[in-house]
Amino acid sequence: MADYPSHLVRTHHLFDGSEITLRPIRPDDAALEQEFVRGLSEDSRYNRFMGQLRELAPRKLQYLTEIDYERHMALIATARKEGHEVQVGVARYVVVPNSSSCEFAITVADAWQGTGTAGILMLALMDVARNAGLKTMVGYVLSSNHKMLKFCRQLGFEFHRDEAGGDTIHVVKNLLGYQ
Image 1 (cartoon, helix red, strand yellow):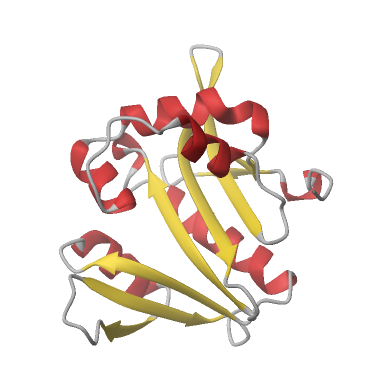
Image 2 (spheres, rainbow, N blue to C red):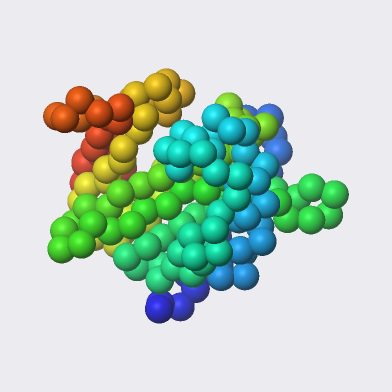
């Protein structure tokens, strides 16, 4: 596992002036990640995990927090609430084996949607991916997830319908043309 990439820790101001910190996730963030997922609405959890769940199983939680920072990167957005750090969003990518592509996922807490958090997370994640030598970022979005499809369109992703007629849309972003 690579050393913790502390150079990626950044503070950002949202549209309303409030402050968030973006940083790579750490293994000791397991409780923070679990609480974040528990706090999502049923719709947000379904849109992210494409299934119903209330919380993350121990192995899934370990997979999401114990990453190598090379083939698997996750940036979390945190804010201070009553003196404690709370997770308000996460964006991650996993490198597609034997390729220069990565698959991304992003989730923002319901109360933080529309604040600019998602844009900050995705732009930072795309920068990290491009700096790691990745050329393409891909994702699979439920066709019913209109907010996410609009977000991907705003970021310049191309859309490809599932050939098999499934309920997901394959989104693709060339990272080389992005600055």
